[in-house]
Image (cartoon, rainbow, N blue to C red):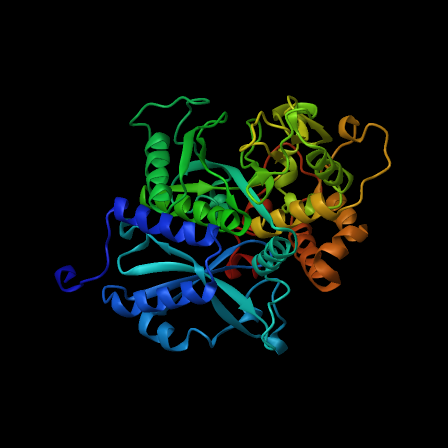
Length: 475
């Protein structure tokens, strides 16, 4: 039967070349009309493509995917609708119709052995009934903010995220947690240590190969401190592309793990007693090719602009903590015994600080926000970090950068801070702010209020990256 299917299946080398060319078009801000024309011509001419997978994320950051028949998409790309009431945090049932536009610049060729032959991926733009960008679609909010700063000030917002996760034995280990009550390691090696044939090393190798083929421009990968924990690093890029890559990174890891009979898990603290997983968020701003955070004469070689950026983040750290740490489980990670970045201060060396200033040069100087969980909505995180760092207020506080203040240690305190902050209303508007808070409270109320010393079933079952309609409706 397969001999009859003449579907597109490219080598990893060919994929990498195509994806890097597409990435360069995004980086150089090629006019979208020109990219759209290229992509539609490519889809029309390439007969071996059967479907286009359109990707978008809900308010909590959960990735959703729709496959459109290629011929249908070519004819109807400017009028594709979907039911927004089925997406948590989107529209109410009475106003359910939303449109999906195509962000033609965010086009990816994917390995056929992981995603299936004859498919390409592209990110979608959620559009309201009146044709305006949908307010709860944080990708659109981030894109509009970044594009606006580029036009008004010539700024390019750059980001690179270090995303940690765990690999556990068995498929769907999170969804089966209510049956097993535990996660089973695939490796008990340590930091930087695993044998070449170790399941964890094989998972890392395969995931890294896929990401390389998808244009990530890998830097390094390795087992992390905790057993069965991993991190695969890649280079920085423009902020919307960086956020898209977080979604693809997690998708690739989950798919590769599943094909190996394993589960890639991005819960911040799935196992008590070992290090949790973070998503350290490195950010910088360039203007006409110049890194605005670099100053060879500055403290830690960070410019005054960079230090003000940090001061604003620290001033609003408690306000935006719920965005950076959006789940009940995330507050287990903010435990000072495991290098947890729970202190509202900045440091070049102290890894317990919310913000770190890594060693850098004129190209690589950056600010690292460490208190971000890997289950956070990447678009919401990067929008919040950049807008807060550029436009937030600086508290009048003695020694703000080294003060002994702490982030909340539970989601209810984080919810109170988020709800009571004027700054979060300025960031998201009243409607989106209240929707997000309601989602977080609904999940929190399904879990034990006291975290205790072991991971409870509901904090896994009703986690926003794991939940499904079946689980949610069991209440």
